[in-house]
Length: 201
Image (cartoon, rainbow, N blue to C red; front, side, top):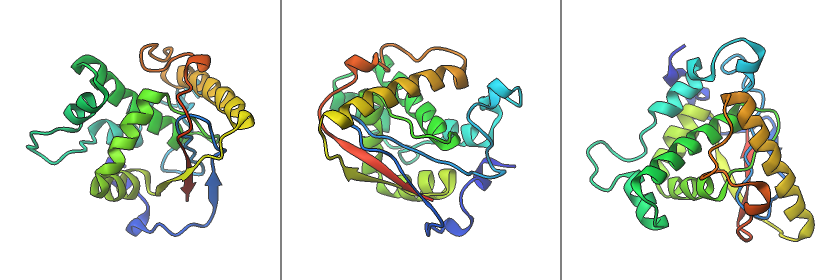
């Protein structure tokens, strides 16, 4: 199967079922399930089936270029300037954003990004054609939407637990611990009420 064959047939965003991620205090939560025979599980490497790097989904995410060909103001340049990051950290965050999308697309439970990964996701949303047509329509085959969080202590506690579970799954799937400079420990991950994500299949 070629990477371009991953998306939903015809780019139809109508849903047969909805997956709603539980609101978090900080960052977003993202959940996918039932990708059918297109992608098995994000824990494929654990099951001995194949490396995540060999999957069409990862290959499509790895090849994903957000800005137009030849653009002087690249996605990385905009992200680094907006966040005040150096080049090395900016590129590290973009790589972790791809990994986050892979975790979300292959798991059966919601995952929660770090604040830095969330910043990359928010900037990607401003590239509306690429985000909706390429990422959602072709690569993932489904749209990703934000809704406001309700906030509060219960959601903050849930966020900490979900974020810790995401870090654990990251290590199982990718075979290495999450980068400490991008994925901070759960108790350091909060950054104020933001948004939570609803994914419709």
